[in-house]
Length: 285
Image (cartoon, rainbow, N blue to C red; front, side):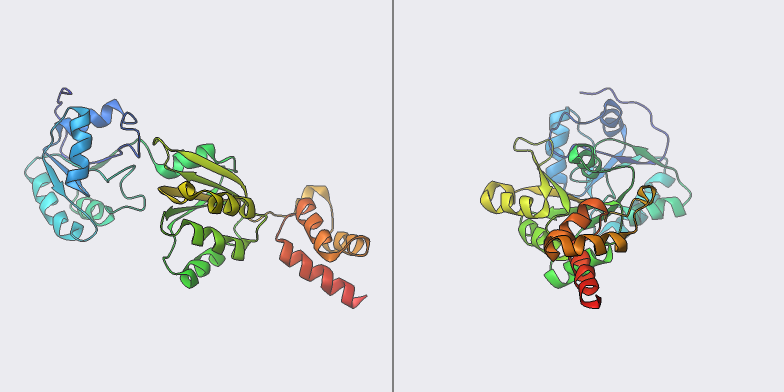
């Protein structure tokens, strides 16, 4: 049993493991052992974690369907001088998880909200993706329907930053195929599956290559996923190349599709866009 401490009156946002139960900070265990109440998405799920940690905080369910109502009750506990923790089923609360309305209610009531940081699936995935991480764009879960999903994907198609999505086993293959349709099969991608769990895998390559890997292995369609797609490449101005002039030079030297692929390697961008430009230049000659 972890030793309890006296906590200041506040709401504590506590990160918990996403898989390996040992991925929790000593401070998180101490806070969870000491609060007057711990709010959890699924108390049955969270109780198993508490048993593993050897602690037994009082648990109450707080999820997307009741957090507005629970917020008033939590504020009343703070008014009585009690301390409260919020955890999600896994990872850092509020990151594609409930909690925003509760935090807003506590802040509006004038009470302090303390982060107790730890694991976050998006950060864990980016650390092993092999893609640029100086700037990245987190989109959370994609829509369930293909039409809406492609609309979302198109909305960030021109972003130069690494794109990060969460996806479920039910839709991972369909989502990857939609990414091929929107971004082209040559765009680099990393798919992190079941991070920190027994069957953790990270697939890396072009979208075409990774789709083939997922289709060839049914196990790669099971679990929880973080999908990271390379951002849209930008011309390197330092090189001093005029992209259109280069396309004009390459166009007559090789077939249009090969020339378009060469433009992607030299300049960046999408193969289909360069193909259309090269065809257009050829027609205008």
